[in-house]
Image (cartoon, rainbow, N blue to C red; front, side):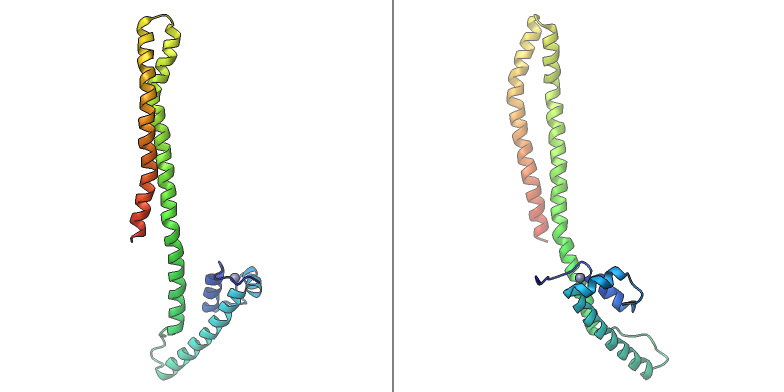
Length: 179
Ligand SMILES: [Zn+2]
């Protein structure tokens, strides 16, 4: 068996054990999974032990001061929870810049397509009307100048859009990476 570092169910299993719902009052699928999964089995074993410790501490506190039954959480349990939370936060933080960069990339892509269409549209329509007018020298000249412009403009436009599309996510990634 490949030793896994983490399991998607470990938090759920831990919460169920802590909530004293394990194994009777929880999803049978999760119980079945924990029987198969090495990580969840460990989580159950450790959490059960901690819960027993906690119950003992609780009993001691209650015995010592029956008027204050509120319980100080076991340090190990607090540590375990904070570890899991840090683990989840790290995973979330790793996923966030990637999602953002993808979103920005898609946004720039859409802007690029829109801009190209917008800039090219007058030339497209003038080509169409030029074709319709046929022999008119004026139209022929405007088509010729438009033809020269359409060759120069989209290249310039395309290059700056490509540069923006490449540079923006890198800048965002670098800024987030420095956090
Ligand atoms: Zn598992």
